Length: 378
Ligand SMILES: Nc1nc2c(ncn2[C@@H]2O[C@H](COP(=O)(O)OP(=O)(O)O)[C@@H](O)[C@H]2O)c(=O)[nH]1
Ligand SMILES: [Mg+2]
Image 1: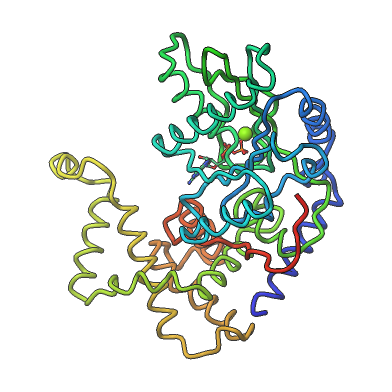
Image 2: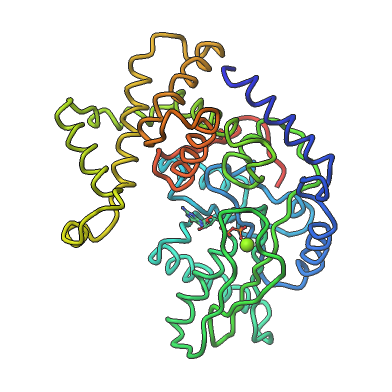
């Protein structure tokens, strides 16, 4: 496989970090162990468990501890961040989980309509549960999952929409949402429905103490479940470029190739917008900062051009890494990073590239393939 060495290097870095424990920069320490125990104790007490996964990695983002705990009728696999995954593969994954007798729902926590529909789905499940236990007035739904899959964002969204539709008064609570893993420290409860009262419990993220599979390590690093510093942004960005180069996503950017005149116009416009001396009159003309849009446009175009003019063999590791190296260099210009920055420049390209990927601006990729013959344990 063309990414084998890169994946092995990333896996080794993650394993080394895991060995060091939380004091040495790894993720597993007394806090995560305590959170894991607290969650395990509550699982038998709640009505429903939503196992939040990342729709880009529906298997690699599994919450391992849940394998042994819940019967499938009380567990719902929520594939969050569906806006970042490959659209047609989401449907395939839903039917795959269905075949495994798992209840599964794909959602984008940033989309109100989506959350409304999900809330209706949850309420129907709650009514179903109440049939078997009509004497309990309060329903609790616990969100569990590995870091950065969007548990807190989902809890907030359900709370917000749920309270509006229940015309509840009072202050909205906020679970802490962050692009960096490990920001939720305690279990917190947010009301999402009345008559009967329904609460969601947002929980701290838990990862197993060690992750043995290099592919899984790499995917967790790319999607942000493992802190970037443990693997290195450059390695992660190289891995992303390998995925992009081997996919068809870049073909969508064919129309972005511009002639020289258009380019001068775009550059001029971007420069004007990012210039600190921008006149007030011009500022009013462009009330929002579109510099980012121009950068995204240029990054896509640069990537398209580099791939379509590449004559090597993408399946060959050496050829692929040569392409990635040239892409890093040509992206300097697209990101408006001055050459003089030297070594640091590569790190800047990596950080900016990862930011664009993680916010869905460089295509939609589902990184896990659907298992064809082996049964994944659920
Ligand atoms: N694009 C996208 N981003 C999301 C979604 N849900 C959460 N996020 C982002 O993912 C990051 C991690 O979210 P957070 O709720 O803190 O994850 P947690 O660690 O599982 O609680 C934040 O930057 C969120 O804004 C989603 O459905 N789509
Ligand atoms: Mg959280």
